[in-house]
Length: 295
Image (cartoon, rainbow, N blue to C red; front, side, top):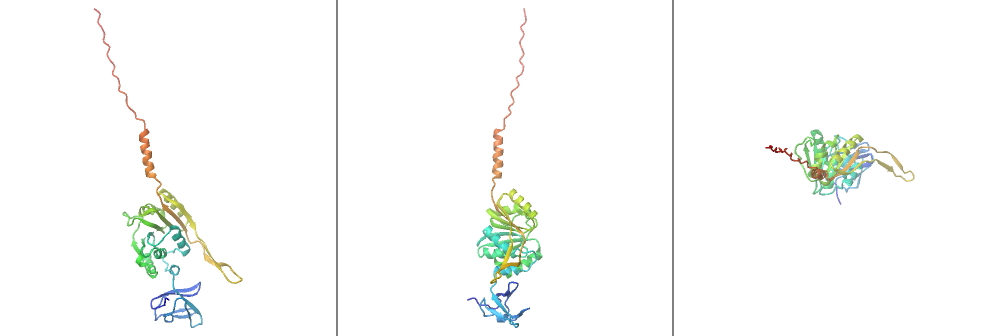
């Protein structure tokens, strides 16, 4: 059974609203409103055990999941929440061994979540233009333990003259104007490869959808996901007054081939075949009539 030791990640869990994610260090103590939690008291215990604080309150020692890392991530930008992350992974069919393109790293929540799924054979290639956000994302990705499966690059793909990747399985876009990069994303995706774009407003969805159709994407779907929790208690179960409402809109699509180029070629060829040829008839020169002289 897994035992907690020095540098082990632990989620100190008191209740759904009071929980702390940390790394165990023998000399450290955690001061909270429910009392002092000594890290040294956790060493040697099995995950799932509980500690009693000096105020006679207890906390459970839980092994952190990727959900915990995402929810406790350091925010530099708005993060993508688990209720949306799960749908992205399921709808796009993201799995181990895939190559993922991400444009707009942000705080690294989506990056970390996806990297944890595609490992150990897959990889996430993520691009951003803000160095400060990239540093925050790097710390979050490292804390989640997936740095080995992520490559970060400071590059603006909107203006890039050469494309850094090819044959990607999935592209994840988190930009204010995602429609601008769609032509380049198409070139980097494999056939039938998926796109997921995160859009805060419906106006963005409209422009994005037009760009997807123009660039030959199909299976286009826009969704919004609302999460409402239930407080299940004996004799008084009800909906929770708290929940996660609107966070973002999601737009999904797949790369296809509409046959536009071949159709244009066919139309051109057909036009050339049926185009009437105008041939000029040779103009006959007038002939001079010979006149006979009378003798």
